[in-house]
Structures are given as structure tokens and as C-alpha cells.
Image (cartoon, rainbow, N blue to C red):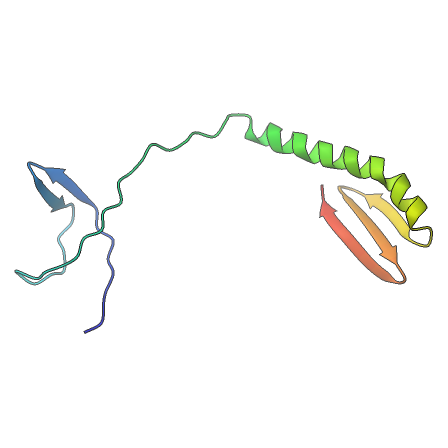
Length: 100
């Protein structure tokens, strides 16, 4: 007999666990129950978008500050920035960092 897993919502009242919906079980059928107790969700700060924007802005500042050093250490590389991305091309290969 193969094992079948089900997720069932139930309410505990008067010492008995009662399913919210009928179950497809036979009378007297034995089952193993694993309980997942709902916890208190941690609320995200209201300013999540602003936090991510601040991180992206800092990434851009760091990349722009590093650009002259990279250009000096890789004189044959073509480096550039366009839109929200920085890129480098060395010996015909193009390497992109993607959006910042």
C-alpha cells in the first residue's frame, strides 16, 4: 500500500481535533497526524521598497567609484554603463553585471 499525504484544516475544541471538511477515510481507519501550528507572521517594514532602492543606489555609487580603477587595471577592456547596468567587454567577450 502506498503512502498518501493530505493537508487538512482542523479545529481543536473540547479535547478533540475536528476537520473543517469531511475526510475521504474509512470508519476506524488509522492515520498519522502531523500538526503545523500557525505562528505570528513578522511584518515587513512599510519602507521595504525604499530600502531596496537605497541598496541599489549604493551599488551604483560603488560601481561608479570602482570604474576608474577597473579601467586602469584593464586598459584593453571596454567598460560602460547604460540605463541601470554596467558592462565590460574583454577580447570580444561581453560580461554584464545586470541591473543595479
